[in-house]
Length: 301
Ligand code: ADP
Ligand code: MG
Image (cartoon, rainbow, N blue to C red; front, side, top):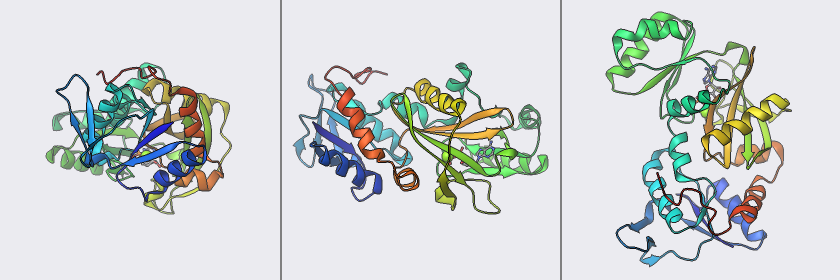
């Protein structure tokens, strides 16, 4: 197969590993700098150009679209979809997953366990909003944040009120969430490919920190997940419409709660922690599924 990888940087661990795994399995792997692909939308034959040449003949595309380039990256991916190229994750599903509130709304529709979460626009509604999530301590999140930036733990209601007011004043969309204290600064990353959790790891925040993100100094270790956690992760990815997803779960007193579903989960942490060849599993998924005409949306919606 000829497989495109949309990635800003061929030297990134995940990109390198996907190229390696694909090449090893006999495929032609082409890394395309997402922001250097440009499109001809007007023609009957939707085209993508790259460094002066049209991109043609691809069977599949692996989007590795960073949060800061979601808009343009999804447009490029959509163009591939319009050409009938099979996307590992579809553009609609990626844009959906990048909005935390929208994601939680979709998950709640299907009855998936979530931390109690509130959302409001007017500063007048802040006190009631805080009560809706059972008061302090609580977590405030910027809707389009990533890598733990824009996630704040407020120990008291007074602190929460000031932080919410500040974010609202800055015209930042935020949500307010119940703090799952019993998780103890840890969460579980379930790496889903197709309808399986193919690897899982526990991430523990460093001392004095509640955010377990590896980018915030968290450390990863092996973990055996429960059947309920496995089911929850698989269902969450399915609801989001993602074939490949990093589903982050908090262990609460009343079962697994999904915190977020990532559409471009990194490979480095999960591969080094579990020793699984995640890149090859992804390529094998494409081998099984990337048949012509299998793109569900073909760039729609
Ligand atoms: P980001 O997209 O920036 O990673 P997350 O929603 O995943 O944002 O939050 C970052 C980290 O903060 C999580 O990995 C988790 O360790 C911690 N965290 C987030 N929400 C909660 C919560 N409601 N209760 C306890 N810990 C939380
Ligand atoms: Mg996270």
